Image 1: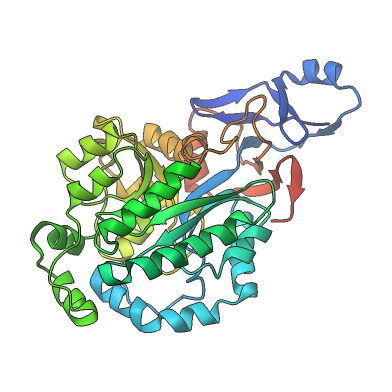
Image 2: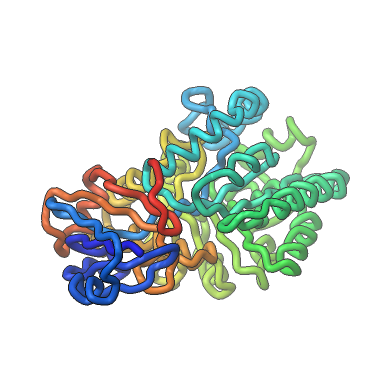
Length: 405
């Protein structure tokens, strides 16, 4: 048993002071230091002379590990330009990111306080690294392919990768299913993959309405995607429209990533069907896709999380940095409530959406926690300062065990 005595604890509602936490693999009790000392007299006690904060470990709900070799290879500023550069350099980037590259990416996330992540895997080459990661991992096996003639082969490849992820036997690793996007997956293939997800009760994710080009292609079979699909696939029309795509997910609550260019009726449908939005602000900016309107999501009571996306469209995998960018990107939203919402989006809300037993400092939750050294006594402004300043992590815990960040 360990008892940690911080100056304050971050909760979904704000900062709580005067409490300590007793934990083993899970959190056993949250009470006053005196009460816990009396209850667990033989426990190891962790304290600090400087002000400290205990908070849940961060959960990165959307990341691609397979392109982690990218730094300056891909072209930013426009989504379709970026996509062409991905096609051109895909094999090189994947081949350059060997096991050491993948392991380093996982370590970087841990160093940044990320104790769980959702990895979207296109090829399965990141499976071993994800299986060996100290973090909890939801491993989304992705299906992609818009040509009906290829559906059987692509589906069988998806099943093989899914079976490989299901063979990983370790606590905290959860196989899952990803549908790439409405523009890139044939509806017949979507239906088959979702049938598997529903039958096996696997979590699902998808990209949805990320770019203006996607919006125009799905609505009118025109725009910048038209030459892209003509040149590469000899395809003249979109295989889905936006609402038809959502109808396929009517009975499958899904993590819908980006959603920057969704219209009001689509947001209403997303909320009605119990979907969750993953907001990736840095990626959206770098690929020229604009900023999602968080206030519109709130108006529909649509749940949203914050993720980093992968290093193909980000310069780092740091959720504190991602939240800071979002704080300034959404300048019309009230500052202090937004700071708390952003923190919730990578802790309690992310845990609920990814079906993880964590995300808050509470009894019976997994002891996935960050212990930070502050430069002030915790107060009502602390959630904001967590995003503005890079505070030192005194310790990172996963399932109660101290990690080497």
